Image (tube, rainbow, N blue to C red; front, side, top):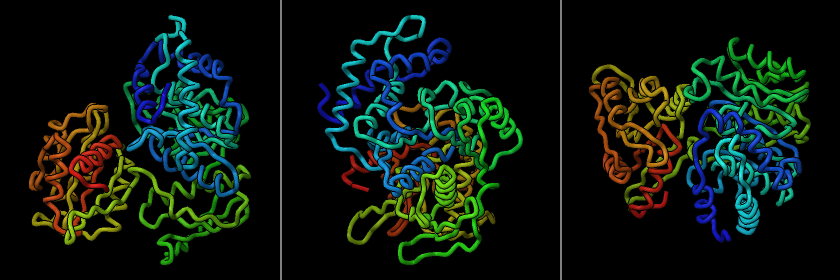
Length: 459
């Protein structure tokens, strides 16, 4: 019997974590349907919204669930990966369920899985970790009486474990080159995989895409007779953004279907601001939102431009900013936010760098567009520490260090693979009221948080 969240985490991790390729991946949906059937098909117990994309899935999903909650509904939220706590994957509009709720669903799942054996024609004889995560989320949301569930894909869409639901909407966020070893090496191939979540006559929501991506989504939607709603075309955002000193937010007016709504958004992150408007547009078009005004300014997300002050002693406070940005577009947006909120100066070579005490702890997992992202980030930081992403995600600090030195040879760039030593060095490099930025991977953010705990700090 599973008696704690740690034991639940161990249960998930005791199964094969890989989605694999070939037989296993091609049979993913058949495997999921068998598993869910054994659980009584919990995914049919509530309305779902399905989200796919390369970046912005998590923030859009959280905002969608918050708006649904604000309208009086109980909304489950399934996301990946978790950063600091397993329960981040399965929440009630971003808030944890009770421990009893988590354990009840866990033990129901464990009993079913212990008796389940897939036919060898379907690949592995037991579910993978991600398949179990997905089935568990569906079961938990059923058990707790959710009216809605916002479901984020793990990878791709067409053969993702989540693609067994019949949603009321298919939502697409930014699409970039990612997971090219699995999803394909071109934007067209990746968009094709992600467009696989589109269902018959089900509304499709998109942001702003170039023609190559939009053509793929349009073709898939047409084949399914699914209407498409484009944010930039269907919604009007008034340009009179106003800063609200009372709750440190940006207030604006968004018009959908001829009706004006008041929206309060995060005043810091441009990424969060856009995603909150996009989520609001979706709920308004679906008829879920009935409110004239919504305040989303206080919504927080782990490692999505997450600010945490850390008191070193009475005289020294260091601000940590965590961001799991790991694609060129997301890194660009993160750097844009930093530039807008931190002063810039010219260094001795005439390059623009952050003014004041700032240090960047950086790492990227293998398979990412590392060189392109280094060119976006590294020139702005005079102090950079390259480290690893931890044992769960492979990374190559030596290669990242070599590339970073080529990008900015005059900057103070070092490589420290041990996260405890890396964060210790970073704190020494910034004076009181300095800032340590942790960017490049959700796994890196978790590693640095754990390192601070190991050093006796709670950030």
